[in-house]
Image: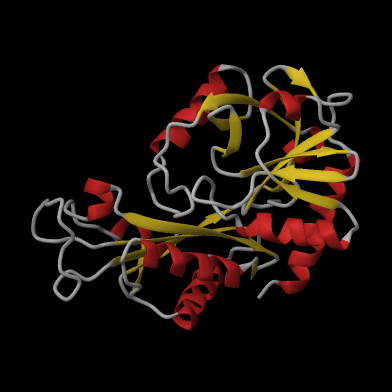
Length: 286
């Protein structure tokens, strides 16, 4: 049985309880982060901690723990649950006031709720999907317009993944005003020649921690990076495409709305970026 963390206590998962009045449950009033674990060590923890603080600040929410305390909680959960490869999920909410109300509760009388738990994923970095690539479809982006804040409002991304599943694909890319924003739970890219194209950072997309690292490594590998809007049709004409996320790392995309890219198998540049990211991340893991 997993040990989880809830509001200062390490508990068996069956004993961890959150109030029905918690605002994450009633209002999706919470933020989250997911940190990968490889070889028992945390990948990109600092980046996730910084983004968490930004999300909290944007929502005028306070953190119940310091960055150092957060690191210790992550490490302890990895240790007690024996995680070699897997994920640590973190969620902070505005807490549980005495009753439901649209107005934010007073933070002096309603402390935030903090929850962390692990997910064991043996062989996380050796995904069979990375060897064959994934197929994506396009769907309208109907989410709210602050996607840069990593909130727990994940209903529409879940619907997007279900649309992809029903279409026989693996995931979906969101499209707004004719241009790709991002995947349901990942950032989206295509490669043409030696150039990587991805949407620029703004309120329209999540500022991915893996995205930042991959683009940095790509430039170090002498690949050009162009951050701009692009269409599905443009991506369909690309040599390669891929997505990035904390749990998928760099995942090749081999088909977009039924159109195969190249010969329909993962391209060499995407696979090389995945290799570089995993190698460098393991070296920097803590």
